[in-house]
Structures are given as C-alpha cells and as structure tokens.
Image (cartoon, rainbow, N blue to C red; front, side):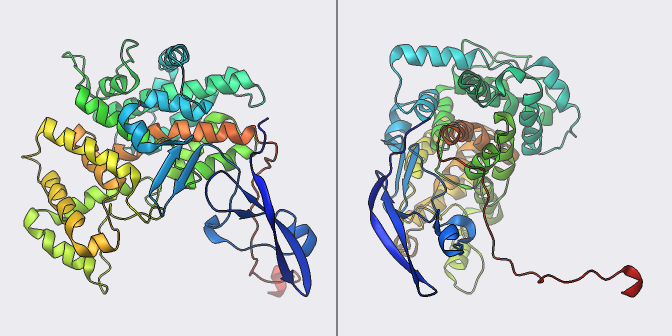
Length: 435
C-alpha cells in the first residue's frame, strides 16, 4: 500500500441550515488546495453537485500534473518537452509505472520484458475473422483487448503484485501488435509478427506497413515522430478514459477488462477523436485559397463554425505537448515532402495564420496537439480510422499506471457518484385493468 502524501493546511467552515461544519483542507505538491467533503453527507445529510466532476478531486495521484493556465504538463515531475526531446516511449513507460527514470540495467530488463511479450496467442488471430472487413479499428480493439483475459488467466488476480506486473507488461507489449493486426485486417493483408531485434515503435511500424513481398526498412525520422506522439499521449491526469479505467478497476475487474473500458471511452469523438476532427476540417476547407473564408467564419460570433485543433479545454495557454509535436510534424513533412498533398499544404498555411493573427493570439487559440498529430499521422501513412487506436496504444501505459496506483491506495473504494433526483415521488401502483 502506498502512503498518502497530502498535507493538512487548515480548514473551512460551511454553514448550512443554521449549522456549521468544519471541512479539512489539504494540499498536494502542486496545484490548488482541496476541501475534504467525505464526511459531509454523514454529518449534514447533503451532497455536493458537480456535473462532470470538473471541481472535484476523485483521487490522490503522484503520476501526472497539469497546470492549464501556465501550459505545464509533468510526468512524475519531468516536463513533457524534456521527455519528448531526450527520452523514448519505453523509458517513459518505465517512469510512469515505477515513478523514477530507470538505470541502464533496469532499462535493459524492462525492455526485454516488454519485447518478449509482444506476441499474442495464435488463437486470438481467429477473433478478427468475426469482424466485418470495414469494422472500425476501435471496435476491434475493444473486443480483442477485453478478450485477452480469456487467454492469460495467470495474470488476472489483482491482489497478486507479481500478476499485476505481468499483466501490465503484457498490455503495453501486445497493444501495438493488436493495433497493427486491426489495421492489417481492414486492409485485407496478412498479419505481420513482431521482430525482437527492433525497438518498440520501430516494431509497430514494421507490423503495420510491411508486406511479405518486399523488405521493410524503418525510417528513423518517421519512427522518432511516432515515438514522440506516443510519449505525448502516454498520460493526461484524470481525463474521461482514465477515470473510466479507475472506476472499472474500483470494482475489482481484471486489468484487461479495465483497459478495454478505457478504450471504449476514448472512442468518443469528444475525447480521442479530436485529431481526426481537425483533419476533416482541413479536408472541408479543401484548398489554400479558401482559408481566409474559413478564418472569417471562425471569427464571426454568429457562425457556429469553429477551427478544430485550436485551443484546449484544460490548457488556457499554449498546449505544451503541441510544441514538441510541431517540431516532429515539420520534420516528417520535410522528410516525405508534402508538395503533392493539398491537405497538408492547407495545414501549414493555416498554422502560420493562427500563430500570427491577433484574433487567435489574443484569445490564445494556438494549434494544439490534435492539430499537429493529425497532420503527422496522415503524413506517416495512417488512415484517420486508426488515429484513435494509436491514441489507445499510447495511453495504455498511463491507464495501467493509474490502475495500479488506485489498487495500492489505502483510501480506495468502489466508485459510486451520487445524484440529484428529480423524478416522481413515491406513488402507488395501479393494476392494468384500472388504468
């Protein structure tokens, strides 16, 4: 069990129905202080009302910190821009899972553990034949990830620390294999087995884009860009899908079921589909000469049109992930050349306007990570239907870290939000013959 790190900083007094109640106040290492309302219902017979839980701390966590006003994102205290520039995804996975950067020996051991878990049970391949060829990759991912619990019974006991570790390694290792299989199935191409001599991201690119008819060579520029995308999406505090994983896990569900629940939540267009929406907007604009028309629509308060991929609900400053993604985006475009892709031409031109136009600058409507990641993934050769599946692949480690932290929290309880009931009051049943 992990020890609580929150510190008491005083209290607040709530007066309700002419009675006063003391609410303890606590602080973490970063972020706003919190009021402890756990005893409020028992003492005062009153709930708090917070739709979407936007002002409620649902847990104590030492994994990820976000300061939306300052544009800060930290993984275990390390800034996202430093990790994106100097680290790699597998090292970030270790950091999120264990709390510290690994030594050389620890990294080698972890790398080997992940590499030798990338294969999936051969019978699992038969699951794919049950899906239509045009099934959305996220529909496939929900099914096959949930089905992992039917194949790996030796790592579903959540009370066994060693089994939790094995399940964690299996999920991180097998997610790229399953995502690549989902892509191959949709393309009508044969599955490609993982190759242990390749790194995590390089292996995924090979499983996705290689074919038996010719040799596949991994482009290091493209691999670095995708690896950066994985790092930037690895965790993002208590968002909808992470909260879903924690909620599912609070019931004692096995880890594979919990991650499948997270994938289902991520599939929602308001969560994981933002980069796909940004790309669809660029396709709607169509040509560079139509950009002024759409910029004018975006500025018109009476027009419902909004530029997708600009601004962010949490970040009221520049999205810190977007800075790192912008660098990789331009490297990929330079590497492959974007002269023949009108959508990418529009993206480059629109980005320039957004960074220089006073309307966008004053309102801090900067391009966010979804804008750049959508462009980059398209340039890498991924269809838009795969975008959210790639997001799920990257976010798996964050989900697992949060799930493990929840299980080790001594204050953990099964999730049970309350409600304000506005339905009918109690009434008597009337037999059908008298209605």
